[in-house]
Amino acid sequence: MSTVSLIQYEDASPEVKAVFDDIMQTRGIDDVNHFWKALAHHPELLKRTWEQLKVVMAPGALDPLTKEMIYIAVSIANNCEYCIHSHTASARAKGMTEAQYQELLAVVSMAHFTNALASGMKVPVDAAFDAGQS
View (cartoon, rainbow, N blue to C red):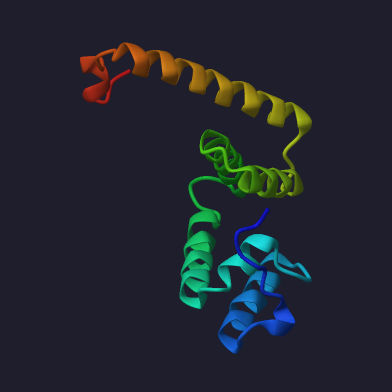
């Protein structure tokens, strides 16, 4: 259950509507998802979050699909059900195949497993890793 109400476009302030309009135009959608509607209670946070997300998720050294898959992995690690669903849908829209998704889940689960082992044993970091070598 949500801890905040969702602000619909027709009930939004002009400042919020401007951000909603940018989200819809940028993404080519007819309505913003619930995350943005929840953030609309704090227009400055809404705008700042959207602006940062646009910059980070824009094509760069990493392609958009890779960025979405990283977002899925971090969302799984942080146990954010909403972001897992949102970014899995976005990755699929960007061409992620079922085989890629299953392999991503295998990598995430292996990293989680080995991270727990290494953390639990307090394994010292190899000197070669500190020197940028592998």
